[in-house]
Image (tube, rainbow, N blue to C red; front, side, top):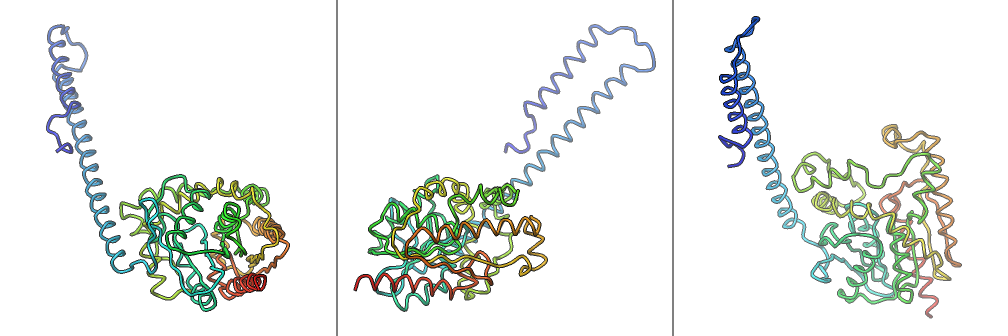
Length: 388
C-alpha cells in the first residue's frame, strides 16, 4: 500500500543525510568549545528526525482517513442513486438522441401541443405538475427534463441555449410529438423558448413567458442594485463538484414543496443531488444563453402571454429578507428594473397580454398555477380561433 510505506524517498533521504553529516563531522571535528557537546547535537538531530517522522505519519493517517471517508461516501451515494432509480422510475418516455436519453412526459390530446420549458434548477419537469394535470384536459401538453436533470442523461458542454434547443428538437422528433407548438418558458426557460422560436419559426404558433429571464438582465439588475450578479457562486460550484461523494446528500435539506403532491416532492428530493452538476453547467452557460436569445425579440403577431411576479418586500418574512443579501432599497430598485424588462417582453408581439401577480414570487407555476393555466389556455384558444 502507498499509504504507509516503511521507507519512502523522503525518509530514506533523511537517514542518508544524517549518515553523511555524521561522517563529515567525524572527519572534520574540531575541539568543542562552549556548553554544546557532540552528543547534544546528535540528540537534537535525532529529535528532529523523530518529529519529522511523526508529522509524516500523522499526515499519512489523515490522508488514509479522508480516503476511507471518500470511498464510503462514494459507495453511499451510488447506492442512494440506485434506490432512487428503483423507487422513482421516469413517469414519461426516455427518448434516445445520439446515444443519450432525454425524459419527456406528455399527456392529453388535441392541438396545438403545449411544450413546457423549466427554469434553472434541479427539479426539471416536476414543477410543471399542476399545470400538466389541468392543461392536459383540453390539449396535448409535454414537460421534459433537460440533459442531466432528473431522469435525463448528461449532455456535452457547454449547456447553452443552442445546445438545449437542439436536444429539444431531437427529443420531440423521436417522441413523435408534432407541432404546431405553444411554447411556455419559466425563468431561464423564457430565453430558451424564444431561441427555439427563432430556429423553428414555423413550428411555434404561441408563447407564454412565466416571469421570464430577459436577455439584458445581468447588466441591468447589477446596475439597479449595485450588487454584482454571480449566477454560479463558489458555494454552488463546490457542492456540485462534491455531489459524487455523498456529502451534499447528507448536508443539504430536502426541498420544501408543499404545493406538489408528496410523491412528486419525493421525486425532486431523490434526484436533487444527481442533477446538481447539470444545473450548474446551465447556470455557467447562462450569459451565453441570454446573448443567443437576445438576437430575437420579435414574435410578430403570435399570441403572447407574459406573467410577472409582483411580491413586495413587506410580503416576505424577516428570514427571507435577511437571506436576500441586499437592503430593502436595493431590492426595490432591482424589482423596478425587473418590472421594466417584463414590460419590454410583453411588447415583443402585436397580440400580447401582461399580468403582474402581486401575491407571487419568482416560481409562479407553484405559487399561482391557476394564472399559468389561464394564460396557456388563452393562448391555445387564440391559436385555435385563427385556424378556424
